[in-house]
Amino acid sequence: MTEIEEYIPIVGEPVIEDLRLLARRLKGKVVQHINSAAVGGGVAEILTRMVPLLNALGIESRWDVIKGGKQFFEVTKKIHNALHGQYEELNHYDFEVFMETSRKNIKDIDTYGDIVFVHDPQPIALITKKADNKWIWRCHVDVSHSYKSIWDFLKGYLINYDSAVFSAPGFSRMLPIRQFLISPSIDPLSDKNKELPQEIIDSVLNKYGIPKDKPIITQISRFDRLKDPLGVIEAYLQVKKTCDCRLILAGGMAEDDPEGVEVFNEVKHKAKRNKDIHILLLPQNDLEVNALQRASSVIIQKSTREGFGLTVAEGLWKAKPVVASNVGGISLQIKHKYSGLLCHSIKGASFAIKQLLDNPGYAKKLGENGREHVKNNFLITRHLRDYMLLFLSLYHPEDIVHLG
Ligand code: UDP
Image (cartoon, rainbow, N blue to C red; front, side, top):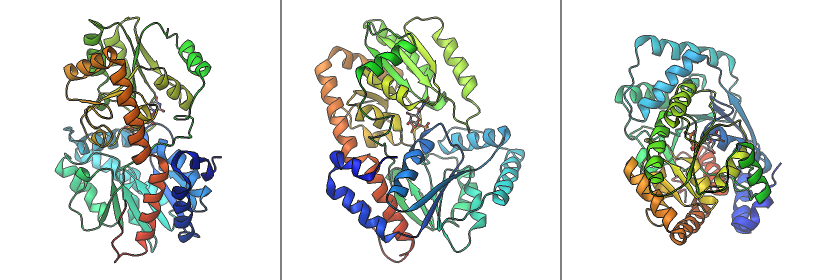
């Protein structure tokens, strides 16, 4: 288990002392996180590190996962897409499926926490169980272009929470409850992000049969249309006309995303038998993701919508030049031409990748700036501080709490 002291060499003693101080004020409170998937996707990624670290600080924290069948997750994927502004038809039957599974979870899940911290729409209806404990709804989605009918449906539950948390200022909505803006984070000491010896990086490339003969461009993502894997292949093929390189498109499946297999097959089909395109269906293995990111000359994240995009922060932390779409939370992380390159189209992505491959010095500088930006803004120590201030604010409803 990681000790909180291990972060001192990265962020400095005063930051850790602040965390200890805040944690003492919360002693005795039990924080219960609830989401819909124990593995796969950014929420599980964060909770895997956040929960043990809160415990290490002396705040009892636990993590429960709701249960749902295929139909439920098909409906919640539609809700997810509609919140991201992508048209989805939800009919009366879909809502009934959502309500039915929600009723089962309301019955089965014990909401014992002093603070119940509910992530994303799937478990939102649990609020029906609210007693005299505190409830937070944490939205990881970019809801700035949501379909009104879906947002209004969720809002019916949301207004009963004590507070809501969004990742970026542009995502906040008119609500009668308190809202907090807290961006996600990565853990620099996790297997996903820690330094790796070259032998491990090489052994992962060997395992997947990827030679080191040319620069590697990589996108790590669940196989989801909103990550635009087909667009990544298009962009790569354009780069490849003038610049010899390889593409890795690697990802796994999230438990709560039923579309993964279909998208994976579309991607395989599009890549045909191109020997320089490596489509990898990864097991849940953080060291392998870390190694693939470190083996890359350029990291790409060509999402069409993105709540935050942890993969961007992961690439930047490894001082890699990142090309990413200017959507959602990505713009918090990449300042164009300073900590990476933003793009708006397939053509723009291929142009940016070429520019980086042709100018290694410029690519290196962007990567270094990116690492510094992540260090200052998107490490888990900042996230822990913000969450603890949020928890304290629940017990001080009249005070204004500034989250720095
Ligand atoms: N990830 C992983 N294995 C995969 C695909 C993704 O470990 O095969 C991780 C990725 O490194 C990142 C998280 O899952 O930490 C995805 O978070 P992000 O915010 O990028 O996207 P989301 O999946 O939440 O939409």
